[in-house]
Each structure stands twice: as C-alpha cells, then as structure tokens.
View (spheres, rainbow, N blue to C red):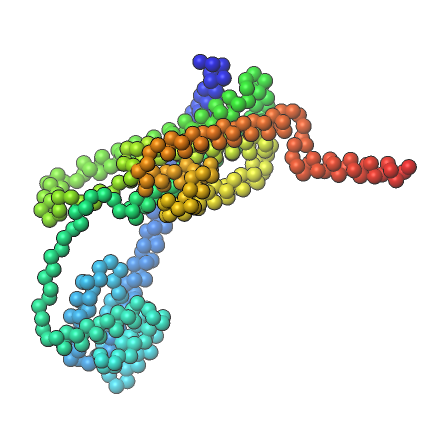
Length: 432
C-alpha cells in the first residue's frame, strides 16, 4: 500500500474510533427514536384533532315527513358509491312553519356545512362556502330522490368487477419511489454530514492539525477524515436497518399462521393471477444498490464542503455563520431534485442530474423511473471528480490561509489592510 493510502486509512480509523468509542455516540445513534417519538405524538394529536373536527360537522335537510325515508335511502346509496372522503353526517329535520335554515346553519355546538330546505324540485341550499362540496352533495341528494320516484322502484345494478391483470408498475408509483429515495438520501445526509464541520476547527485549536500537516500530506488528512465520517454514517445506517429488519421479523412471529393462511386463501380465490407489482424501473436490487452509492457520493460531497468550512473557521460562531449558507444551498438542491423526480425526462431533470450537488439525489430518482443502467456509472464518475475537486480546493484554502501563518486570508481583513495602507500613503503625501 502506498504511503498516501496508508496515511489516509490511519486518519480514517483514528477519526472513526474517536467518534464511535464515546458515550455520546450512543445518544447520537438513538437520536431517531426521539425524532420518531415526537413525530408520532404530533401525528396522533393532529389525527385526533382532525377526527374530532370531522365528527363535529354535519349536513342538515329540512323536509316534509313523507320525504324522510326516501332521503335516508338515497343518502345511504350515495355514500356507498363515494368511498374514501365521504360527506359529513346527514341530519334530517321535519319542516315547520318557523324553521329558518340560516338560523339552523348558525347553531352553536356543531359545524354546519350546508342546510337544504323547501321542495326537492327547487330546494334552497344555505352553505358556509360558495360552491362547496357539501352544497353540491345536497343538490345531488335531492336529484337522486326525484330520479328514483320518476323511474319507480328498480333493482340495483349487478356489475361484474375485474381487476387489472397487466403487469408492471404505474408511472406514478415509480415517481413516488424516486421521491422517497430523494427524501431519504437528503435526510440522512443532512443528519450525518454536518458532523464534519467542527472536526478541523477543534484540531486547529489544540494544534493537532499542524502536527499532522507537518508529517503527512494534507490531502490524505482531509480524505481520511471524510472516510472516517463515512464509516460512522454507514454504521448508523446498518444499525437502524438491522433494527427495522429485526422488528419486522418479530412482528411476523406475532401473526397467527392459521389466520394468515385463511386470508391468503381468500385473496387467492378472489384475486386475478397477475397483479400490479410495485417496483422501480431498474429493479429493486439495482435500485437499492445505486441509492446507497448515491448516498455515499452525496455524503462525500457535502462532507467535503463542510470540512473545508470547518478548516477556515476558528470559533463556533464562525462555524455557524458559514454553515448556514451551505445548509440553505443543500435545501435548494433538495427542492431541485424533488422537482426532477416529479418530472422525469424533462430539461429540469437533466439540469438536476448535471449539477454535482444535486446529481446524487436526481440520479437516484432517475433509477426509479428509467431502466437505463449504464448512465449511472457515468454519473458516479462525475460525482467522484467533484469530490476530489472540492477536497483539493479545501486543502489549498486551508494551506494558504491557515498554515501559512497569515490571518489576512479573509476578504474583509485584506480589504481593511489595503484601506489602511492607502490612508497612510495619503497622509504622507499631505505632509509633503
């Protein structure tokens, strides 16, 4: 092994162990539990709030006693034909001489979305919002009652339903898979790559980086730190993958085999022999492998940028100020990749695949919708070139601005020095 590679792996092992072999790493490893717990609590609260809001809503029909049964039957038929997000509960009231639909709509205690009164042939509908879905439903309900009365009592239709037997995955499902890959890679990169920003700043403070720079090439130091952080990220992903697989296996052992066999037999008796299989265009094994490689490239790209920022910063405040624009830029790249995932094959998708910092995310989305495989090798090579370029620029800036002993590498300090020199020269000329 060449001295450069040997030094690189020594630095990577040193940084990997310095992070993993600490008690705080356990808290970092279990951080997703707190995130999932808080998200679950927020989701449960939002779901309960939405359910209570839906339960409090109603539609009111003020009609004659003879129309009550017909309205109730028509409402049952329409709700059976409208699965999913059904209208609010229907409340029937017997019409009286002093019943005001506006007053009914403004009653406290429950949200009233629409009130229908008058004859069914020309009903009056008072609705909370103009052109609302609730008002249209009440109009449809009156029409359904009149249509049934005009046609007489007829037997309901007996349709024969057939499931789609064509194989393959829909475009919308593949785009959803691509968006999921973009989101997961972005989330993991945002969570794991930010650790690199403080590594060199800490070693600059205790003079360790100067000892390393005097003994080994700086390029091997930077690449070694990136590989050490990548090892930490892979360990993080492997831990949670193992936890997810173990949880799935435990959940499968809790299922009654007899009930599963009975459900499978019922499904086999009613389902067609061929069903839609949800899968990316390149297949699950290739897609998962390429998504992992694209995560590695995205991590190395962003980690190299953060490492260069940490090499230039001297204090925690400078680290925070310099990291914020990079994080904003990363979110912009995520937005661009998301738009590319929703428009595969478009010019916007091509631009996102070419820009190096959005290329890993956009190419992962492309692997879900395009079955071409050779293009991914080209994309990985393109991204690797940019990783090397970012590391090279970070090393040059660190060497010229920090290790040279000068403190005027910053633009504002250099400008201040130039302004001071100009003022001194002007004073000398005035004395003459």
